[in-house]
Length: 302
Ligand code: COD
Image 1 (cartoon, protein in one colour):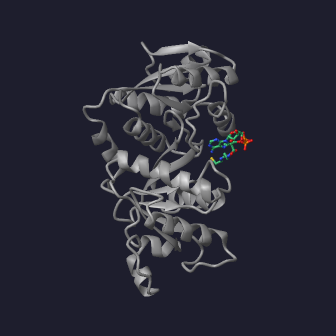
Image 2: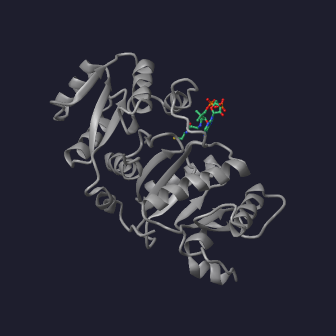
């Protein structure tokens, strides 16, 4: 990873056109204030879809200036989400962001066959962490969308993430596929999938990255641990991207990094026709702000 700090995402946006971000069910204090912060910094132009009265109330109670901003009044949450998704689909917006609506309702709208944002690829969640104990930013996937990905899904998850990292300037990301152990065990599916992904990478079936696995978490992030175990690896200790075996492991790692290690984070959904900012209620305003910057940095530039 060339980037060491999430604040460097700003540099990727210098001289890039302002992206249009549509906030679905915008009557949500945290998403609204982070979107306004990114707008004030000149990175995005927000479009607020939701209950106008509730949006105005939140804005005035929290000293948020929404004067001159485009507000599309739709008090019904499901309809507001549909309007927001359709705006991205019809190229009236470049980024979709979740406001006061449940994660699965938003994802279901995105996956709608008639008016959603399917691109034909698998959609996956991608998060980048700034952890004091690591020498660069580290990406983690999938911690929030695909529940129990099979090998085919993991290939798509790697491809989505590698394409995103390439856009962030990481040309040949080092990818560690995690297991509980670094030996291939027929009793542990995660290790079998990891071994197959590594071999597929060696055979150029998965390109633009260097994959190694299975690696236990310590080997992936510490060369000393890998050497101690006698592991020869081009990835160990310098991983750019960690591939999770399933959503439970991913979600626990995500929350551990944030709550125990006080990591900063930015996250988006990849694989749709546009990036989607889908942070959860427990994420800080700063995490939401950096997620918007990440989405803007990888958004199509026309
Ligand atoms: N990418 C592309 N298409 C998908 C994906 C995906 N990741 N997931 C489902 N689809 C397509 C299917 O092919 C199908 O056509 C349609 O969508 C419905 O598929 P289902 O019935 O398997 O999926 P749903 O609608 O029941 O649920 C999809 C969700 C993404 C909502 C579901 O996977 C989910 O709830 N994921 C976990 C989200 C979550 O709760 N995260 C919590 C941590 S914040």
